[in-house]
Length: 106
Image (cartoon, rainbow, N blue to C red; front, side, top):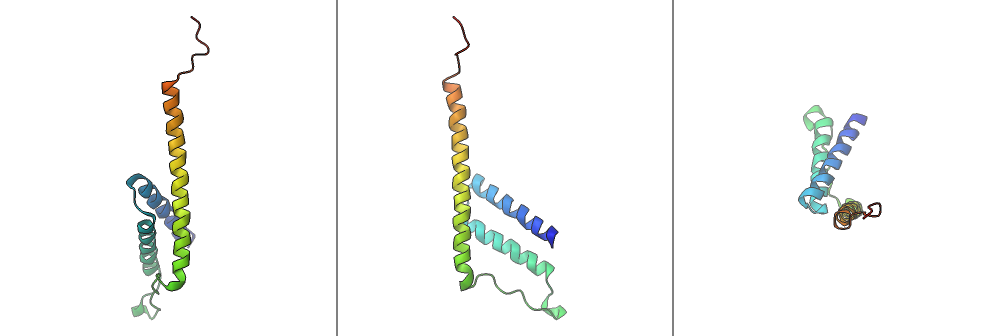
């Protein structure tokens, strides 16, 4: 189970990186993550033909609040990352525009 969780975590990180680089909306990202998790559960869990229970759908009313909170958390992470990238770009462009000449003697 730890291996599966690590795999899901890696998939989640990949999805967030994809969202940052390809401008995918947080809701679309969340639905992709849910589909991935459902596929993993179906692959790992017993099937009906084995006498096991069917995997319940993951889009119930109880999950709606959790999904909204998760989407907000993802949006916050994206905003923070964009700020970091913008700050890095701004500082590197300032260095090019205003090179440090304090040590140069004329």
